[in-house]
Image 1 (cartoon, helix red, strand yellow):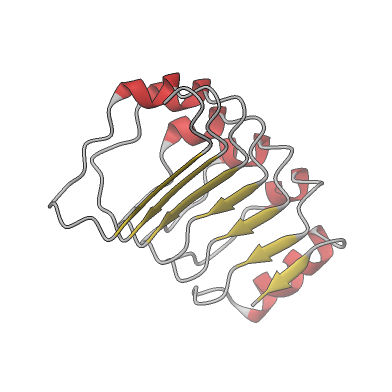
Image 2: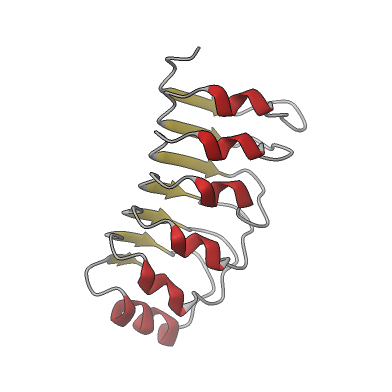
Length: 150
């Protein structure tokens, strides 16, 4: 399993999936996809996954972004669609290599101005949130090189 590059868990029927701390020992893991899967937490060891470039946590019932995600310094694509996320923590804006960020269908009412620190961001999907036209216009100013999906 140490050479595993992609881990995809979808439609998990268990009430709550327990993700073991040993996930952090999958040194070759480049993508982790959890779709329609409720999990108790992401282990702290996920921060060891230095090759991780894609993380998808879609329809997982998340109220917030798991804090250990912010240690994935190589992450380029982060998909957090169809959850219940209402705030973006400042640590999100430290993911400097992020090129694609999907926050589609969450409960966001504003996007912090710190998003301008994501200089490599090329696509931001905020559709299906409760953002005002004013907030969307500010996003376009803060991220001039980014395609903002409203």
